[in-house]
Amino acid sequence: MTAKHRKGKSNQKQEENFFQSETANAEVRPGGRNYSHLLLVVLIAVLGGVTGAWFCFQQHQTLTYLTENLTGLQVKIAKLQSSHEEMRFTNTKLHISESVETRLSALEESYTLAKKQVGMALATAEQLKTSDLPAQVLSLHTEMKARLAEVQQATVSLEQLNQFQSALMGKNKEFEDVRGQVDGLAALSTELSLKVEDLTVNLAEAELKLEEKIGEIAALSATLHGQATDMLGLKSQLEAHQSQLDVSVLEMAAVRKFFENERLQQAGEEEQMVEETQPPAEPREQMEEEEDAV
Image 1 (spheres, one colour):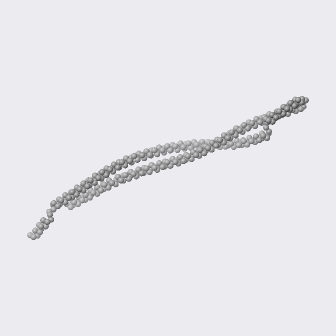
Image 2 (cartoon, rainbow, N blue to C red):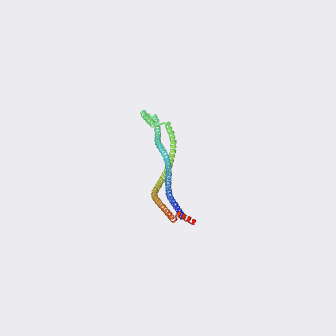
Image 3 (tube, rainbow, N blue to C red):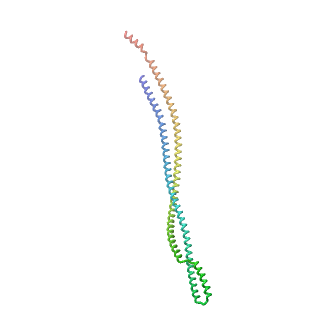
């Protein structure tokens, strides 16, 4: 009977160890799963933040480069406008010089014509000196004076012509310099137009890249939102499983208590059966004393 009692105790200990291991495993597993899910959520959030920061940094660098190029382009456009103003001013000077040249040519023609008229008048005066008509001489002399006065009013001196010629030579040099400046400005304008075209192409490419990055960020945010919803669903499922596990643990505790009560009751019944089967100790001693006396 003692061997059976010991076997019952060993079975009881094995059952207790089994229930304790089951409860420990049931208590440890949900915590580990919850920790792993939370770690996954944190990693996804960190990756999303890092990628968003990197995209923002790249776009910031692109925008700064474009703003610097645009400022340089504005400065070059301002220089080009000033050069156009100078060209306009030089064109007005050229028109003025052309009018001076036409006036000088007209003055030269009038001077040559006046010299011819003076020569004719002097010739007629010489002829009149030799003739015998003093009235004709006087009339011709007065006419000659009038013609000379008209010629003096219409003509200019040689010094003035030389001054005009020297001024025109200086103007020609200035015009050559201005022409060189105009050619340089034309080359600069073509270079600026090429740079403007390059900047427009770069700007279009940057806009396309920006649109692509915006689409990628939108897709990433959508995936993150979907993963967040999935994680919320997993969390709700985990809570439901946790509640079911708690109910199962309570049920296992009740079953364990029931088994303990059954074991105690069985042990009591076995003790009663042992006591009933064994004879009392006092009658056995009396019988032994009687046998000794005989």
